Amino acid sequence: MATRETWTTRAGFILAAVGSAVGLGNIWRFPFQTSANGGAAFLVVYLFAVLLIGIPVLLGEFVIGRRANTSAIGAFKKLNHPAWWVVGALGIVASFWTLSYYSVIGGWVIRYIGGSITGAALAAPEGYFGAISVGSSSVITHVVFMAITVGVVALGIEDGIELATKVMVPAIVILLVGLAIFAATLPGAGEGYAFFLEPDLNAIVSNAGTVLPAAFGQAFFSLSVGFSVMITYASYLGEDDSLLADGVTIGIANTAIGVIAGLVVLPLLFAQGVSASTSGPGAVFVSIPTAMANLPGGDIVGQIVGIVFFGVVLIAALSSSISLLEAAVAFLVDNYGFLRGRTAATLGGVAFVLGIPSAWDTAWLSWFDGVGVSLLLPLTVLGVVVFVGWVLGEDAVAEFRTGSSADSLATVWLWGLRTVILAVVVVVVVLNFRDLFLTPEAGDYFIIPGPLR
Ligand code: PHE
Image (cartoon, rainbow, N blue to C red):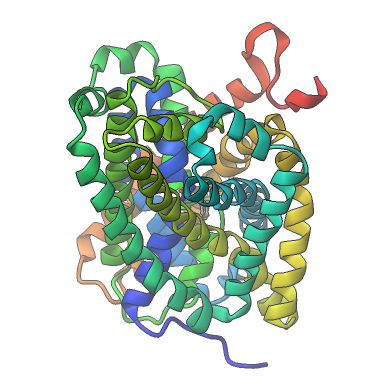
């Protein structure tokens, strides 16, 4: 068998992981989860979830991947706990599932770059979204986005993912900061900041039952944990890095970029008096162009801002979708010796077909997103926490310490995974399950797809 690829540099790994983390979750999902769940109150819980739970779990996935040096399902076998392959498999199912609809949204973004260039997306935002987000139009852009994703993954780790993300991640940061500075100059931006940054602690307490699962789900989704993706990426690492330093860098970079995205989106909306409470998959695609169409300076300013904004979203989405596809591709390549290019193309094709319902009807897309984030994701995270904390145990600590000088932190980390983090994740799983199977209004069980009710 050919030797397995590795990242050429440590920065290459970090940028690829940041590229995976920063995506539609930060720019499309985060601002609207924030506004749907009480603005700054949500942000507080989210930050807590990222720092105290998300990053330790991310380190757990890094430990599994680097110690095993093979993709997510084989990893558990290689670590001498073969029965736990189920956790890796669940993560791969989660990432493949997510890829199917992620690519649909990525396709819309491509369309919106075009719509910003011609001005059509800004002229009648609601009608435009209605026309391009469903039916054959949406299926076509879904194909295009998936094809680009396949192209990058087919090129492999060094020449594909590492090279691409080395360009993409700095571009995201520069463009997003530029947009945030622009947004700050808009009259009325202050209200957007206030909504985003001044927490109402009462709102957290009185809505804990919904804010908690939403914030934790968002934190895991955003850090790409619970998808076998970070296990896979870490499997291409050598032994000499500090996983702790890398994990903290990645977690903080992702959060910072999420917050900057909020500093772009919310002032833009508030400045133009567009309701920030619009939710659902169409929110960014309707409110943002509405806001852009009304910018001071006229149509041309709106179009330029539109091109840059959706350009950033597209880059961010691609640097994530490649990681979603890579998790499954790496499994087949590592375990069966399949050729990478053909595997990427075949799996991309299957994910495309799985995404057709989401492309056809946004109600299906919401359902796929709900099942992925509320069911597959928390279960995989739970599996990772139990596995690293209670099954790998001291081996996990040894791996954590390799390349790192933070000896005592390793013990605290393991203890945290075994106790507090495990407890919190169990609560999150239970709350999410309650939403999926029990409460929804009037017998409206989310687990039954909306379009079939
Ligand atoms: N973290 C990505 C985002 O926020 C989504 C993603 C999840 C990517 C899991 C890869 C794995 O958009």
